[in-house]
Image 1 (cartoon, rainbow, N blue to C red):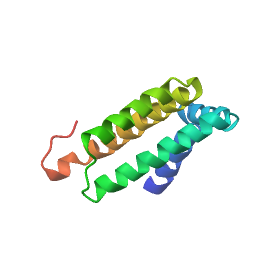
Image 2 (image 1 turned 60 degrees about the horizontal axis):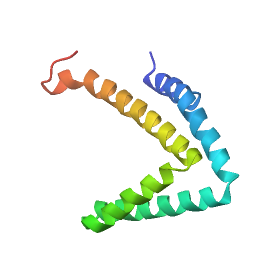
Image 3 (image 1 turned 120 degrees about the horizontal axis):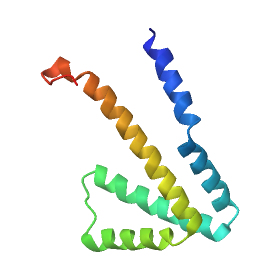
Image 4 (image 1 turned 135 degrees about the horizontal axis):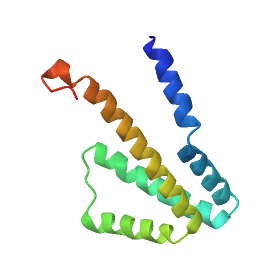
Length: 115
């Protein structure tokens, strides 16, 4: 068994998944709505700025975090953006589950019990 071949099979399975298809479909709907696209782009830019600051140790103040949460809530009122966020969350869950499966398979190496 070649581990890299299995990784490529997994990559293909993820790329062909319903979740990725749902993300692609939602993105197309958003691209056809300039206002939705602008709102999403603005949110993603702000989100990335906050994440970069957090990674450098500069934690945002509570007001800034509240503002981001409110913006997220407003975006969720847009059906196409909500559809995108939901599909992204489902894909994120799959990736987290896969990561856990891989990590758990190696836990015996470091003193953990294998499942």
